[in-house]
Amino acid sequence: IAGITQAPTSQILAAGRRMTLRCTQDMRHNAMYWYRQDLGLGLRLIHYSNTAGTTGKGEVPDGYSVSRANTDDFPLTLASAVPSQTSVYFCASSVSPGNTEAFFGQGTRLTVV
Amino acid sequence: QKEVEQNSGPLSVPEGAIASLNCTYSDRGSQSFFWYRQYSGKSPELIMFIYSNGDKEDGRFTAQLNKASQYVSLLIRDSQPSDSATYLCAVYRMDSSYKLIFGSGTRLLVRP
Image (cartoon, rainbow over all chains, first blue to last red; front, side, top):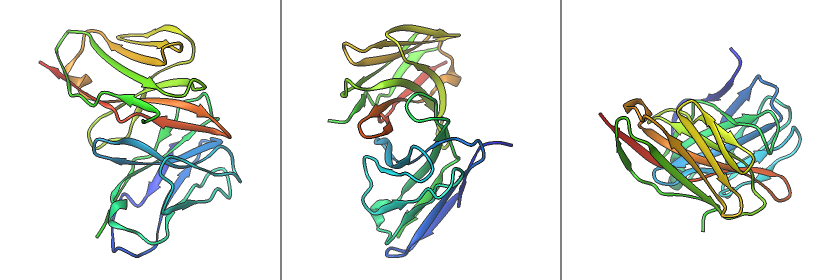
């Protein structure tokens, strides 16, 4: 079944540890996005990629990095996790940036202790 | 000021009524506007999109866009308890590249 897959589904992480959240899509979408969702704050854009090989900073990029080596994969890395990064993380993709709907993965619930 | 603003609610309406959800955005260069629905613990899913000024209808849903006033709204006719969810407004903004920015969402509660 075509779609967008995130891993892990949930994770408890010790502060200071490095963590990579994985995101893979098989729809050949050009654009991909990472959001975090916290209660009352909606979805906030962390990083995005309009096409393979390019990335950009969103609204809340500090403490996170991404790469887009190919069309399908868009991993999000927390270099040194802090408790304020406790959140639900959603990866999304769209056919093209600017005018098409985004499809979301199932989310990763991350708790940093 | 957030780029995309929504009233957090909850907006409570009786079953069968019209629910009106509003969203304003700050960047006049914004284009392509989307409404997503998100049930608790689930991922957002697209309800409607609108690109041009005016109304766009799809079943019980109508999206309205007014670029001069920088607002977009979603009307839900004949509201059902199953419509109870959080509704997220999203806008593509273009500066050096395209960013899809979301509002904080409005929680809708439809009372049976």
